[in-house]
Image (cartoon, rainbow, N blue to C red; front, top):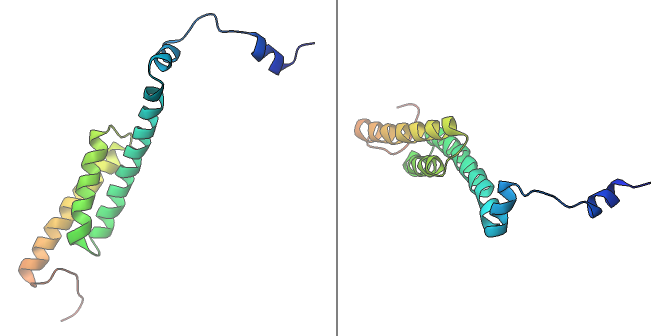
Length: 114
């Protein structure tokens, strides 16, 4: 009686798939794409969160960060394209809000009251 582990040890692949042939040529290429894609997805989410936080506090710092991270994630081919675009939009809104606050009140932050 043959167990599963014996079967996997004794059988050898008869044909090589294109992915296996690519891995044999360049072993770093197969692991680099998913890692870059995961980093790009993380940058898209970070861009959205920083853009959202920038509308409330520190818009002078968080707005440009959201713009840069959103642009980088789109350039690296993120699967979360909508979040990256929202991050870019919110980052631009942060900078517009900063310009509005600076021209109306002469300040760089929100304040409630007189």
